[in-house]
Amino acid sequence: MKTKSLKPDKVNIVTLGCSKNTVDSELLLDQLKGNQISAQHETDEDANIVVINTCGFIDVAKQESIDSILHYAERKQQGDIEKLYVTGCLSERYKKDLEKEIPQVDAYFGTLELPFLLERLGADYKHELIGERTNLSTPNHYAYLKISEGCNRTCSFCAIPLMRGKHVSKTMERIISEAESLVKSGVKEIMLIAQELTYYGLDIYKTRMLPELLEKLAAVEGLEWIRLHYAYPHQFPLEIIEVMRKHDNICNYLDIPLQHVSDPVLKAMDRKIDKAGTVQLIKDIREIIPDITLRTTMLVGFPGETEADIQELQEFIEWARFDRLGVFQYSHEENTSGFELEDDVTAETKVQRCNRIMQVQQEISADINSQKIGKTLKVLFDRKDSEYFVGRTEGDSPEVDNEVLLPAKDNYIRLGDFAEVRIVDATDFDLFAELIV
Image (tube, rainbow, N blue to C red; front, side, top):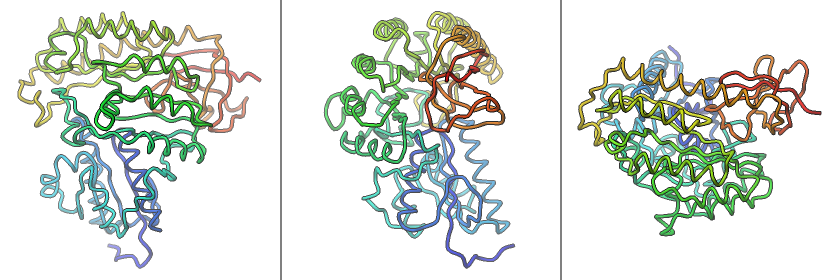
């Protein structure tokens, strides 16, 4: 076993879960480096301290977080690392249980305890670093920008309010300042994220302010793409789509998780919207921007969901023809109102329903992609992967959406640059391109 290192501390930050956790880890990295503490994101090279930023959203995510904690706890026992700290949603929700079950961890911290974590790491919380975002874990040309924290919604399946608290908006001035700082550092695309985008401003401005925020962000010089993630469908302010249509640098893209369409299921989920309202919303959005890319997620296997409910969901998806769609299996989460219901859909049935819906979406995606063959598209290139340069269109967000593949042997593209390409072939979820010169 190794003895304690006499070298200066070096921190490795491991991030699990969603893009909101990515932003939190970047803020931690900024604070550590601002305190002259050596730190990196997801690298084991010479690190003697590990901080795991966990996810606690659903069972699969919780298990991944636990497995990661156990992995680094074993490495600590073997002497490969000296200190292990855990933060994030899982730690917020299950701190006492984790302290009991995995005592090898030196300390657990909740989602709002960054100053205490920094103190344990020998760093001061520097308020002047808030919003600087100089240490991105993403490629330098795109970044996530969190405009609020927490959620006031009461969806019966969701534990996020238990882990992130009530909705708290950032001030518009702080968001604009952060965006300007990111652009100065080379960022060309910003993904706006929150637990609930459309609620932005209600707490501090007493009205929904996302449209005005978008107007101000669109005016930031050098910001070429602005992308919207996680908009709640109930009382959706269509002014957002009007602003989107007005500005070329706001992507015609909206991530709007619908979760379901069957009225009994929506009511049990406490989604505050019914099928008729959902259908009308999609029609209204597409009336304003007919070619908008709509991304959604669906949740199958909720307590009481029947075969008729799934058939209705399938028919709705066939009608709506979403450009992007993901499916989650229901996870029975403690302390949510849904936990009071009987988890009566079997695990096998949940898997079958998930696969069934994804098969429908796969066929839709294949058809939509095939119609792009021969078209010219603007693409932002993120990385080189084997024999391809890999990029995205305006209708694609990193990691979760389709990709555009450009053969590297015949072309050269500088990563982080935009280029015009012609689509020459397509699969269910990828487009193959040639460069227009």
